[in-house]
Image (cartoon, rainbow, N blue to C red; front, side, top):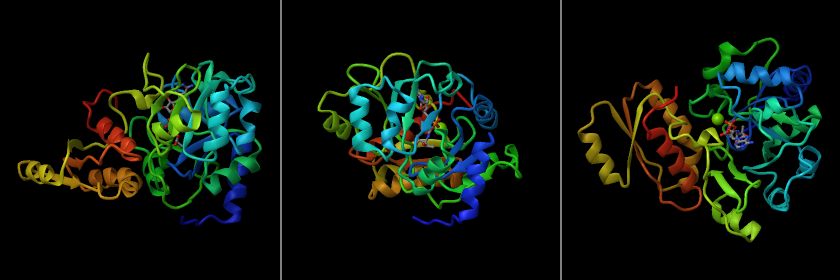
Length: 311
Ligand code: TXA
Ligand code: MG
């Protein structure tokens, strides 16, 4: 993992968080736009900068797995087991929100999403700031998540205060797709968003059945259209199908990293952004097989290809 971070950057970022400013921080999944999760004014700025509706809940990032019960005293045994096994790592648990976290961070809900990121810069930042850190992906609402600091800059530079907010460069994110979200407040637990920790892994950690999402949409990743570039995305099952479709589609490009699904996840959003920069009109994506991280890549590609309902 490339790390161009220097001590002074971390100190500035810690000071920024403590004074209610925003920090773009690298995590192992995607870059987050971080603020002190206990400060309602700082949280309000996240929504403003992202252009995100205020009822969309944020994920709160903790420094250590042991902090779970400090911020969510009513977390279930399932949540505690997942935290003890999968944290630090790309897994978010939805738990009852403790009183020390303000309702704004959870979009007014009685539940909150918590995770301990595995990225050393994120953990150092959260630990040294001494507060839990609310951080959605550091992109405009509805756009694809940023996996490099240049993506963050392209999306948000004009909306952040160059003097007071801080951008931390941790190199490209090693996972590349957002964390798995598991709602532990329902029985059986539900996987609301696929990520690097798979349904099968969640099931084996808990030793119980795991369901897919049901009921009203709780995660914005559950909306049919999300994680979308400007270009149209068309899905195919094989390189041959991709070539055939491309032949009849002017202004198209093929995206096929299906031979290496970890690379597919890592490069997916950068490839979508590059296609937009190059003026590609149709990105023809070859779906990876539905196993392991392949589920998360297929989920994001499917959402990028869905009819556009949000901007
Ligand atoms: O990997 C990640 O999770 C990244 C990095 C920065 O940690 N963060 C991220 O945050 O993807 P965001 O805000 O872009 O996506 C958070 C998702 C949203 O779909 C939101 O609706 C869902 O988590 N979420 C948060 N709190 C929730 C809650 N209480 N109930 C249901 N869904 C919740
Ligand atoms: Mg997001």
